Image 1 (tube, helix red, strand yellow):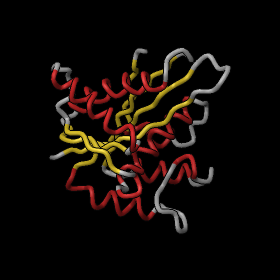
Image 2 (cartoon, rainbow, N blue to C red):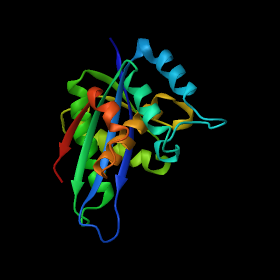
Image 3 (cartoon, rainbow, N blue to C red):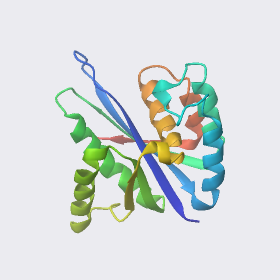
Image 4 (tube, rainbow, N blue to C red):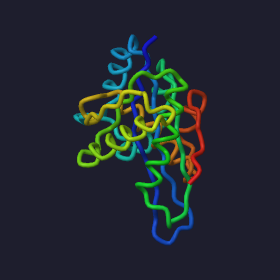
Length: 189
């Protein structure tokens, strides 16, 4: 079995609120199942949409998408950092990233494919390389960045991140389907 993790994020930071959160979700796919996973995800697109994106989907479609993702041969690991407004979002991401990479290593993941944040990819890769140099656990996982429109498996990670974020906001519509295939880990800010 060769496992690849597909990783995407969600976050909430609202002016005046005392609690913010950062969610970094990885969907683990055995490479032998990848073509089937991609085909199902492509089939979930609505109309002429190039990709699935949790936030952009109509409310009535979200539970259907979450149920379809939960029915795929995948598992999800989601790092959640709940923090105060004084913690910058990028710090919450770094903390979540370190924890998620460790969890992926424990799961036996060979490669992590992140949804590209374009200009920020290079600095994140440098951060991971520094962690490797210092022997930080989990940083042996190979890391790549893809644009989500080019990799449907990233859409499943977006679904997991979105469903967990909405659950943290009090709306469990997608979480109720994904809970059985998802392991949530807390990240201490």
